[in-house]
Image (cartoon, rainbow, N blue to C red; front, side):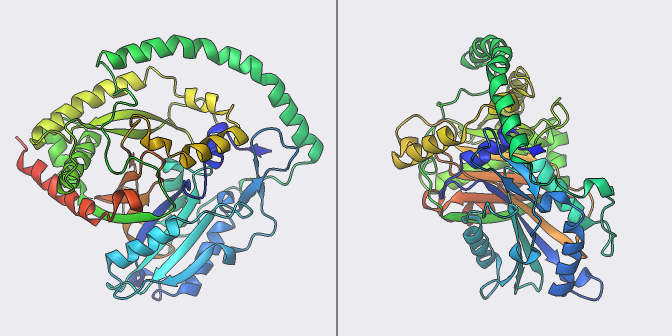
Length: 463
């Protein structure tokens, strides 16, 4: 029986019609590299071949009334690829704006929980003659690292690459568990909870004063609820705005080496520079630095082998208030060092362990009340936005025969933080995906176009 972890399930419980919690990947492709030339039917045949090998694409939720804890994944015995793969055309003239608007519309729609939680849209009619694919998967089934891994399962190093080698006994999900087994495991889990809480509580009680002490003394990451308010810190709707851009990884590394910092420091400096210009143009640049939530993979640190999401997070101070780009890099390097040390005070499995106690009804009612009462506008800002940096493929990949020319990740937004910036390294490029709550952020192309400018000013400032 493959049960969702509490962290996986929390993405289901916190989802509403306006706060949709799936992740998307926009891939631009060169169809000319497909052996014999691009053909949708052959593209779909290659996809079907791989989907039959990869169980993550054929699992669906099973959550009957007598299930007393988190849902389980089961094999969809009636799986129909036609319900998940869609062929659509981008409106003329097929430029980046039309593509982004189409993706924004798709990104704002919820996935059907009666089906495996993913959709793939093949988008034709682009002005440059290429095609695009928008892959949408629920956050309950993937995090950034596992999502990128699934894309590599669909791709290969050559246009005619063979399907991935997956052992026969690993190609299928479990079947629907019997009522007695499901109820029995749920009762057992329920009975163990007081003991599990008692085991976790001492570590939490010991950590909180230490963690808060560092934060309040300025020796760690920023304190939540201290972020300056911006226009994208409010209650979100289901309407989305999307934009994307790409940077040269060698230029990022040149800045890294010149300043003696990390690639992540440079990425956050570029994000800070772009946001500074964006907010200044809107007449709302705060005097204080923005605060970003930065998800962190704990795949290599965790001792838990259960669940799809193996993440933690820390708060990062983005020096949008500093005009000098070099000063922004140095401030980020120091603040990131403190934040990471502060974050490592927290056990890699703490978030996953406490998430096991998440409750569907309580979470669902809380987030709906939070939205209806527009509480995001009534309390101090927790954080301004989410910024993710996901490691991607370091060599060119071919998706079902088509060379991937761009891989733009699009993460979710939340009430109170209506902007998500996700960065992914991709074969010598740094691809940046921007997704926002449209009523709060407006069009995001001005922000996307500031990224090359922000990188350029850092190159000019290199020692």
